Image 1 (cartoon, one colour):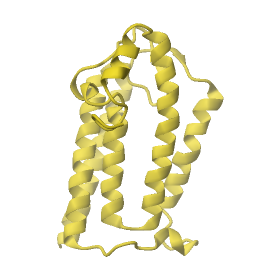
Image 2: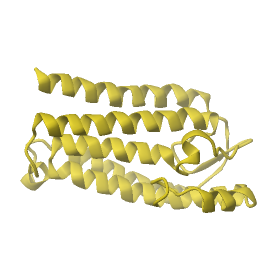
Image 3: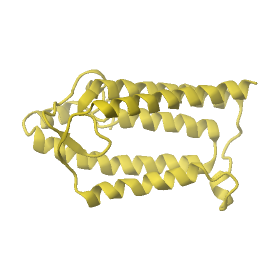
Length: 191
């Protein structure tokens, strides 16, 4: 019974994130410019690989489903807590960004530089939240495929951050460098 309550908790956390993303996608500003098609395509390779890695139950190679630690109630609760915290942080960031949001490196028409709320803690708080939520899900699951998936998402976000940072430097040449010096990219006060 406990396990199913935890599973429901994970479904709710990720479900809320998905609903906010879907609803928010309908209220974005039109695109002014974006990263090149080729550079955007590179972002989908790690994401597609992640989808395959986390869905490989019973599909060779067996090392993708190798359990790295036992699944205990304490481990599941820790993972659930991190997932909920990460999803809430990402949702807060997504709502704060509002109509400036885009799933791809993009500058919107009348784009605003958002530096309040979670953006005062990290320049890319959506990625911070999603990485934390994925880490929680990986901890609770304990399978090697989930750990590899987390690293692939980190790589994808690293590439995406570089593309977004370039667009922001071009769009806000006076303000963005100051913001960059003041606020770290992903981990408040660290990185």
